[in-house]
Length: 99
View 1 (cartoon, rainbow, N blue to C red):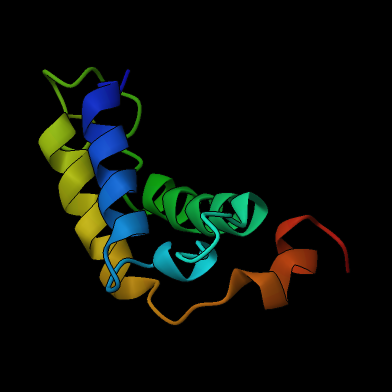
View 2: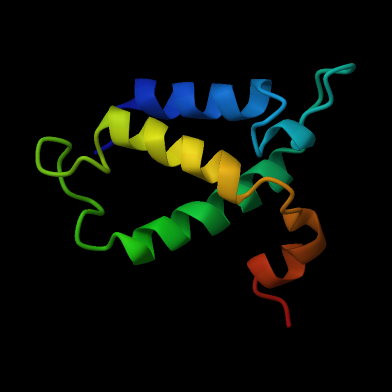
């Protein structure tokens, strides 16, 4: 449903920009990334987006600005602001369903 270019650009920006919420999960010096941490953060944010915007979620991009690449990039900018400082590594037990 979602154009991959918009999604890739959103992810690239969040990882590469020091203000991106995925940046702390990437070690600039070694090039290593905490992919589990990134994945967990993305799951938390996008699951919430799906709940909040349920009427626009899953529609073709021609019918939903959210699913359009411009919408994905805009939601990515919002993600960077909202999720900045959130460390899902501390909450991974809750994300993965453990009590």
